[in-house]
Image 1 (cartoon, one colour):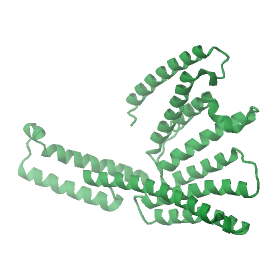
Image 2: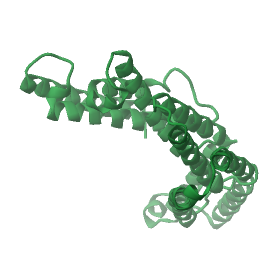
Image 3: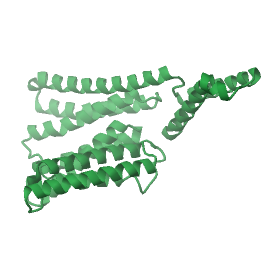
Image 4: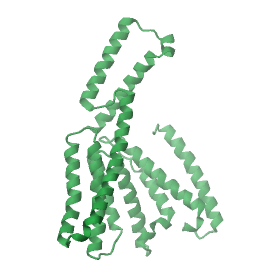
Length: 296
């Protein structure tokens, strides 16, 4: 369904742009349609757009597209506000509850939000409310593991990052949510860096002190969608590329600015110059590759 809706939106955009082009004076100067042809095209365009809007709930005008973007932004901000409200509510009344009640609330909150997301996804095609409730479910699940560890005096480990990342990816692929995919990729990249440091004998909380790990992980995320085609979610590869490129280039920027974070036992200035050159070369190649493959 998600693939069909994306393709239907592209088809609606092509029809709308063609109609606007035919109505412009520049095109009319080189392409003149008879009155009968104009009426036939207008009737065909109206029918096609009406069918697409009825079947896939696509945006058929520029104002509708602006409204859709506004709704996406509003739903994202609303989800963040609701997450903050849940956390503040718990902070206000948490001390009045006994341990069984606290555990029950911690378990029920993400499950209720997840059930709400599933209910909304089955009844809406735009997924605004499903995305909002998915964000609340992820935030509740993250708070769940943190608070349970505090209640039972458990040592926090990087495995929580793995659980959060997998849960976020599950939500992303279940409902076709790009925000959840971006969050999941960032969480899993952080976990991979933290686990590598933990296995190397360092504290896992120092994952951000080794940018070279993050640069390699960014490249891996960038290349991850290339071997297979996302048939159900054709807009997901662009999220992989965005998160991977941002992670890799920010890590290279950190190394070019503070060479002391590098694994290489060279002089600080040498390392900084090396990674400045590497970042410049990769940026140029990424631009060339994106243009050649028509990535947006």
